[in-house]
Length: 113
Image (tube, rainbow, N blue to C red; front, side, top):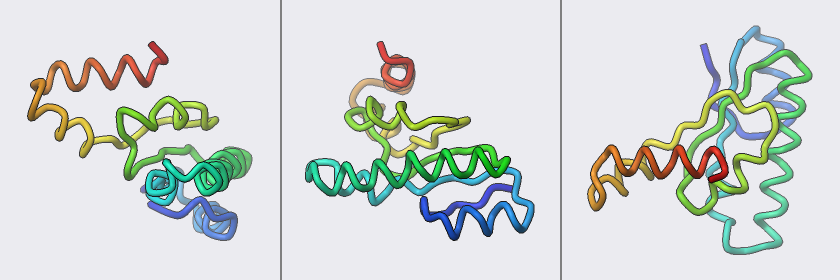
C-alpha cells in the first residue's frame, strides 16, 4: 500500500503511524511553481524535507505528479527516492518521438546524462 500525500510533516507522520510502507509525495505544487523561483525553492524544500522525514520514519519514498523533462534535473536531487511516476510527460512526448525515444530520453535525464 502506498499513500499519495502532500509533502506535509503531519501527513507523513500519519502515514507512518498507520503502517503504510510507501508514500508518494505529490510534486504538483512544485511543478506549478517551477518558473517562479521563490515559490519553486519553497516547494522543492518541502519535497526534500518531506523525503528526509519519511525515510527517517522508515517509509519508502516515491514522488509524482507534474514531473517532466525540464524539472526532472532538480527532482532527482530529492533524497531517498525509490520510484518516480512520470507517465503523463513521457506519453505526451511519445506522440512526437515514439515511446522508445521518449522513455530513453527520460531515463537519461533521470540518470543525470
